[in-house]
Length: 117
Image (cartoon, rainbow, N blue to C red; front, side, top):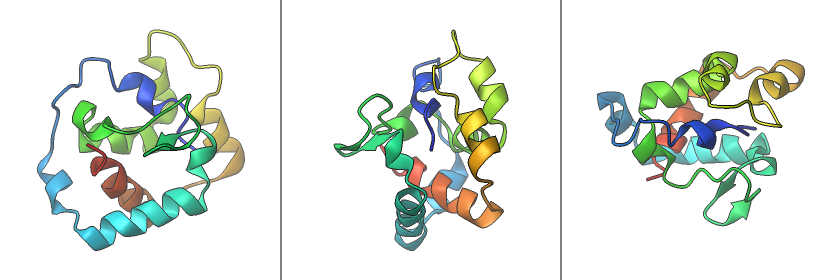
């Protein structure tokens, strides 16, 4: 689901954090993990050795702030445009064609992604 999220992770955002990151508890993180699985994000991304090796998300929370993670789910085309080159598989096109993410699911996905350190 998030095919280019990891590409930006090395673009000068190392160590970025947010107070909202620590606000997510185990229940929210687990709910976000379930949404990640239900929406089949592993078709494009890999976490803990499961999924598509091309776009791993392990450690993404060390490289991107909570707000940057959220922007990948809300302003995907803009985030892609900030990359040195556009990826072959664009998350913005996939999201537009396939699925909108509710605010609740987005918050839970961000909580999950923010836990991947």
